[in-house]
Image 1 (cartoon, rainbow, N blue to C red):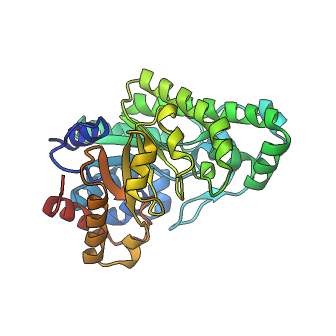
Image 2 (tube, rainbow, N blue to C red):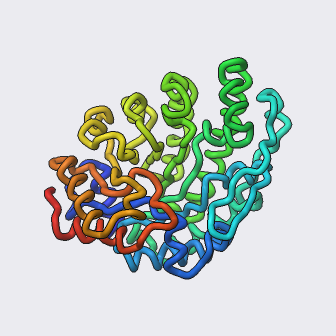
Length: 339
């Protein structure tokens, strides 16, 4: 099987030739090509080159068009702080009152902020690998976009005090995701990974996720499906056990599971969706390849009998990780695959 066939087969619940290896490798890939994080997140050609070279070195089954968590916020108008060897962060939140969202212009993916950088990366990746490997672009979830443009504390207060205003902000954020997501697919991405860290039960009560996020995720995935995407993926860090049962009705067919949730629990709660995970991300920094192999074996055993499983990190592989540790996951799947 090609990597594309292997991953799509697992997500659909059929039997792949082996478990797909799908670590969330983003900025860490820059070091293989000798680029700084700043170069990686601001240059689509260098991002694509980093991803392609990393896949050659590691042997995993996916390519990511992912820069950082601030792409949408910057395109909307938030200034960022850039560093050479760390991801950019929001410097200033541009929305104080939720009801002022009508004054903010929707970004145009073809020209605003670094959205064009990601579109370039998608085009280069697709031209290079065609359909041999799935290219997963990244979009932020509406809740996290809203928190970035408003500031987290302000967003949380207004979520309680002004739910009508927050709904307007979330409608705006949903529109941003759909417009940007469609552009990414048209540029060459096969699918998206929706990153929504603020939607974690560690940050907001689960009922807020159910009320504000589930219907918006469903509409997003319907829009992406209409553009040809077959994979609807979400990645939320932390203990997601209280929201996992709502993923399937949101349209999600694969979710990344963090290390604090066992795979066996997640499969029971997920209602049949495919899972990715759940090696502890900082193991890739602090452990040896042999220790990583033991972690990978634990995951494979925990998911034994489940064909709709892809092994990877429970969240992003940190940018200072050892590449040999990531390669170790591929090696253990090739050597020890209980499926």
